[in-house]
Image 1 (cartoon, rainbow, N blue to C red):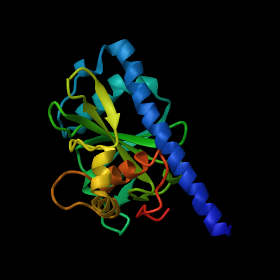
Image 2: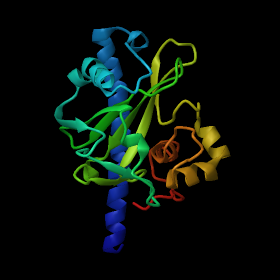
Image 3: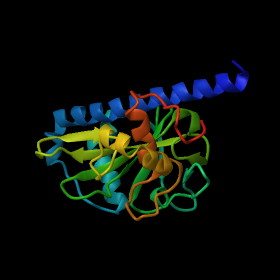
Length: 221
């Protein structure tokens, strides 16, 4: 293999590994926090675009179980990151507004952000992740550097679950039935007003391929 091919293959493995770790981490965070704060269904979930409320929620339910090395606001002139689609659209409104709390850098190199702009009794929030190989860059690309998981309540309202979707109730079957649409929306921002961004679609494409970046993945790694 040529050097560019080897470099690309390495980057793909890093993304695949860190995505799976991030999914596991968020699930474990919820379970660990439940041991101290009762079932996640009873937590102080609130549909809010108030960054201070989001930070307070994060500090109560997630921060005690993370190794945090730094944090900074997600919006404004001194924001850490500007996130773009793979075709250069951006910076993404989703990461440059007061709907979010802080970007939080973790000791293992990744950065995470909690947004609680959800939908009542369906979608509680979004957990966005910047992979460790990209955290020192200010210009990030959805589906290469940034990915997203949803925090949802299950259908019988008995538990909170993590899945790389949003309030749209996606499954891997629905992805396969609409694969070209997912590929297109992983590549570019969905301007339909659905409130779903490329990183949701991109994460879903990898998740449904057993945590492997598929051959038809539309973002250059």
